Image 1 (cartoon, one colour):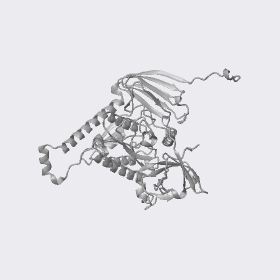
Image 2: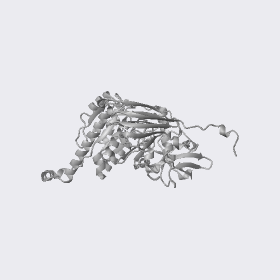
Image 3: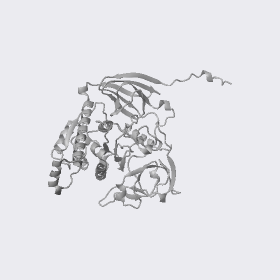
Image 4: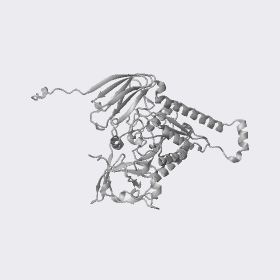
Length: 492
């Protein structure tokens, strides 16, 4: 039986824009896919823009693309593919995404990538030198044993770690991209560098509003919008196409460092202590060294440069890389001219040009990226959907802390607060601590995970919340920060 008129409806073919791009050596294909399509579109065939490496070699921030493998880049991705030998890319924009892209080709000697790659090789030399020194300390020659015997009172020398690099610069110069590039290139050489993030605006393998560190010893996710630094690369995100990383995270709860400078100083000090412990316990990580990504700092910003100096001393950095500002490089060079690390190394300041493709992320894009990170933490992305657990608890079962609105002299770092309807749609951090611990201990403990408050029933004194895992929260305290703000209702 036929339905009258149904056959008159012409089938709608999907909008497809397919083309081939040929890049010469040291060429780049730069692209931006706006946050316009829903992260949870039911049409998986129109998930994003697909790219296939048909010939040659190409990489995204140091992670190589496999030949003839189709990669899907999702909405919210702003990045580039680089080739050092030349390549052919097949671009397929199924669904007609508003893709903004262009091809940029520099002579090799004029490409900023050349200086970044040279920096990588310099760090590898430093790593090999540190490994050789550690080998000598472990198996000293007869002459060295005699020297050690004469200086027995001085104690055993600490093993020197590999390069400790702090990356800084003004906004929009590509600091995080350089950190990803150096980490990816190091892992390709078999190293296991430790990466630390001191910029709360960008979470490292976690939600924004956090500071943290993680060892990168395996492949990074090329397709993920954050290029391997996002929440979908952790065990909480479910099955992954690449080995997951296990970050150590502290909950800052603010968007910018200047929102609570004292707290930032204390958290970076605590993070640096844990980094040193990791170096002591893991030789491979110690030899690979450390990459520290920082918040934006500009020339003439004395307070910002003071905070950089604090970070350099806490993490014992021996190399400060300044991107995109010759004036800032000069000012920091003067500041660190007489400084030495705990290993009596000079603190070297190196200035590098920023890529002309690096741009400052506007507020709307960053807000949308934050929303997407929160959604993906609880619901997963297109490649791996997750089903968070909706749970209910009484007011008495949850213990929530928050920093005082207006800190005063002698004020605690946290105060216990009552549960109110104002908490609805906020994301709260679940701490690896006990509700009986002191506010100080709770504030500086690491993060176990996050929940989002779905609804607060004041009359029944019940709270409904989403959690990525089942089970009660037990005696884990919660911290209610001041950022990210509740931009959206995850249950809508």
